[in-house]
Image 1 (cartoon, rainbow, N blue to C red):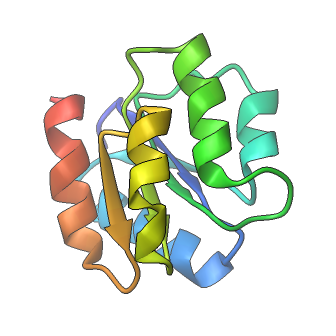
Image 2 (cartoon, rainbow, N blue to C red; image 1 turned 180 degrees about the vertical axis):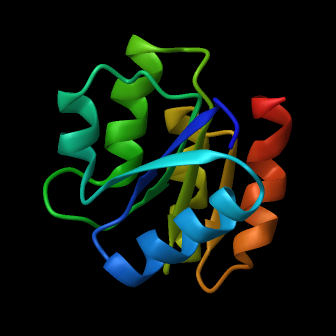
Length: 116
């Protein structure tokens, strides 16, 4: 396992587990969160974040904006079942956005250069 840690933030346990599997199978460590508030409650001691949009509490791109204020260097990737959220994620500072359904390995491939 790599010492690079990726936060996976999604209230859907199956999506969380699938993304964790994808990153772990490529040698990265992961830490799961069920919503963005839980992510913000921590110290943001991760190397990248992959986050859903629609979760309990604030929307994912709203959490992204807070993350970028605290850690401007931290790459955040947004996901959603609604492609119309892409612009909101870009404005919040995300490095990429994926509309569901997406290829989990495309997400890993987008994040990987930030972890090398």
